[in-house]
Image 1 (cartoon, rainbow, N blue to C red):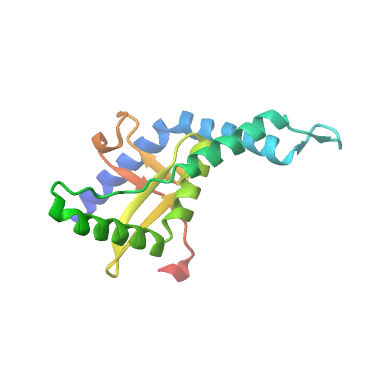
Image 2: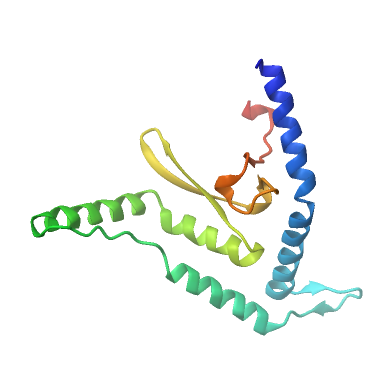
Length: 167
């Protein structure tokens, strides 16, 4: 398959994903507006500041705090007594790597997306020999609308916009 045919197929798949995810994008917009109404208050039809319901915003903040408190952490366990020291070193190494790549801040962003929009996406990668985890705004990710599981989808598109200087 030549590159022009492959490019045409990818564009067609992207358009299909974009068209089919319209309802999901509308849901994200409603969730975001509800969050902003509660967190910041919004001006109504007049000039009066419309206050949000404090209970909803407090519930959002509490859910976010609970999620962040549950920061995932790996603990390596030894199968044999002679492997206990190795398991402790592996656990310490894993914690150091997670701290070095700033996973806690990424996890907080991921939890904020989940609490605010209902879903969060992240990607694990190795850049110049260093592991990294990046959280993406769900509004910038297009997944296969025909599947419920991300792994079963035909593709995932990450949408970003760049100036010509980027290229």
